[in-house]
Length: 238
Image (cartoon, rainbow, N blue to C red; front, top):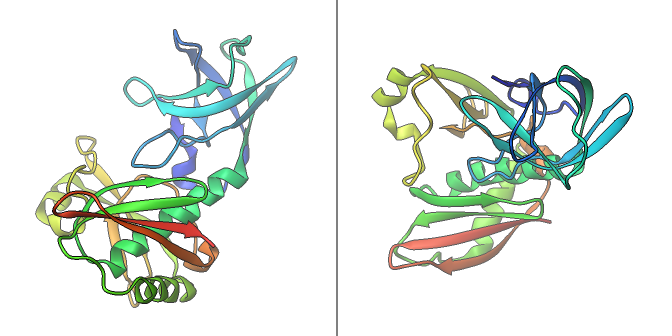
């Protein structure tokens, strides 16, 4: 099991860890990591590992067997031996852009209150697919509404509910194609706004900014028809 430090604090950038395993493909498993693994439309983190006598660049991060997280080196190289203490250095600029885009997509699902059929996050742009049969009337109105939410400087926080609570209230799940992972007894919810000004609450395992103002201004890009009942909306960091 790898302790997911990014889940408790998405702003950690330099943290020590211990090598507890290697994969047959040359991946590195630590006892605890700040590197987010690919999942939920969010790319795996990149960065660098340093230890006495060596260093290696991390190209991406993926989920391994069970609850392990695997750091994938950029190129074949000598791996740090088991039990080695390494310093994890996150590519923070890239990760923070993912956090901004990811949080903005949550808000996009607020200004377009329709079921979500898919999504993807990048460092420059992101997109959500919606179950939408009719075209949007005015892209400018949508962009203004999204940025108005961002400018409210709403708090972004998380909470946990049980699997049973999730099943009892399926309305909080916005995605049609992917259900939140259950089976461990609890599910993480990301809340935007506090109890008095909450605008969104949905299951999510990704990383997010602490306040919406940190996102910065968002520009709406293409709105594309993707099938008879599906439209894709792309957003860009301005």
